[in-house]
Length: 162
Image (spheres, rainbow, N blue to C red):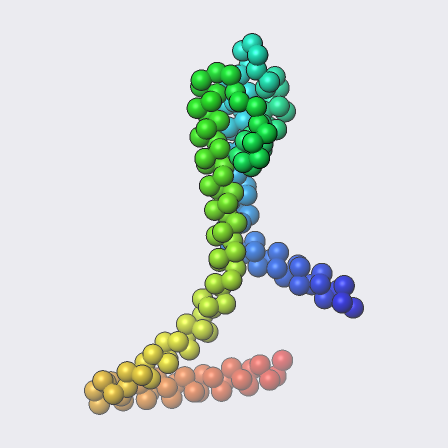
């Protein structure tokens, strides 16, 4: 039973992450840029003597090793490949770590941004401002609140029937 609950939570977590955070889009962008930059490294290094990047597969490995900041990537030989590699390291690292920060921040801030929370906060703020309202504004507020009460009662009825 506990295993099923954990699977359900994991599925809900993954669904929330993919629906409400930039994670999936950023990972896809990162993969596309990785493939493009690695192609640039491979093409820049192909035919150059002394390079360790002899295939596209080597370039793909180099791309991961370089942006992961592990320090295990061989340095490209040509100046143009070094330029491409430097740009990749910066962009790849920023996208990767930025995606993680943005995802975590968005995921944990989401409950505070829910529409019902905004509605309640707005009502609370406006209640604090009642002393500053004119008689006409108070009448309008009363009509709005009456309409809101009718609507809430209707929603409660609708939900109790389900």
